[in-house]
Image (cartoon, rainbow, N blue to C red):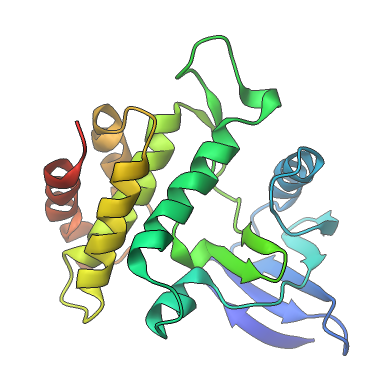
Length: 219
């Protein structure tokens, strides 16, 4: 197998010469079958996710997507920050509107991604596809928006040269949000701080990131 990608928690391998299948293997041995089940249910409802072909133990076999990530498209200038923020907000709204997770209460529990950022959106010929569902669970929609906003804000308050673009994307996402977000920011920050994949330096930026989200949020 040829390795074609590495994330913070998993490695991705090409499984065939024609490039139609990939294997995503969690380095810590995490069970991939739950994530596969989530993705299969989402696909059944027409939500844009990679097709799941097989899952066992830490291994998840999926279709191989063609196209850049939204993050790569932002970095090379082929996608602008404002529509990127709007796209993420739209993907979250579409997720939270799925029939199987839509309760009577308008802002009650839904299926949440909880890590939806430009690196987890692939721009394929059939449209944007959302990947990496390991963190998915049920909860209030505002928490999902708060998590995405906080992740963008972490980049926006960093010294990276693309920080201004992240701020623009964050503002666009916040303007497009339809769920109460600010009440869920403390919980989002707690979740991010507990993420073992974040460096101490990244955790240290969370206070400034939360403050930026609050300053830009539409109230």
